[in-house]
Image (cartoon, rainbow, N blue to C red; front, side, top):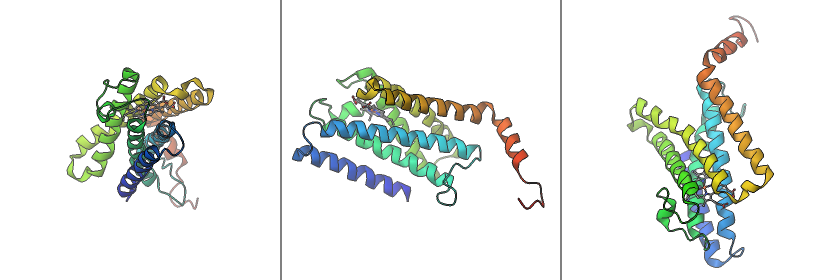
Length: 216
Ligand code: HEM
């Protein structure tokens, strides 16, 4: 289900940006604004996917209690991160000022605008695509291969943050600093719990589990 919704969101939002640009709705900066807005939505969704993924691995189940199970939240946020990454790339190609050819948004380090910073974004985008598409086709992949590809989501988020800081117009504003710091700090904390303090987390969870026969 989440994969159909993700494809529909990517196609509908990309089409909306292209139509708005061709009709001149919102002036000349519409595509640029769409590129920036979709970038932030993609980054927030990628953060949520990594964060809930760590929770699921640690069996902490950070879902919305009684509403959305953790694993579903993880799947949906991951798939939608790819949708909004596609919208981000399409909006950049549609923008009349930055003058991106389609391959500038697909091949790392060839774009005319901040090539190094943009190239890191392109690599991040391919990593997001690999993680999400390998999950959609998980039935065909050996579990070990799927797991290895899935780990690339940490690199995708790290590259997405570095890319956003280096390429983004919004980097000069203080709320952006707060957002990047919060993303980095929360994920570093989650990764610490996931890989370095795993035993402590398991012991902590076991100590909170009600004893057999206990009502609570
Ligand atoms: C398809 C590959 C990508 C290309 C060609 C690309 C290109 C760009 C460019 C040119 C900018 C500058 C826009 C501006 O000045 O505001 C930008 C900003 C940004 N990008 Fe990407 N990007 C790509 C993938 C990604 C991915 C995968 C993420 C994270 C999920 C991401 C997150 C961001 C963020 C957060 C900004 C900052 C927006 C702002 O501050 O205004 N990008 N990107």
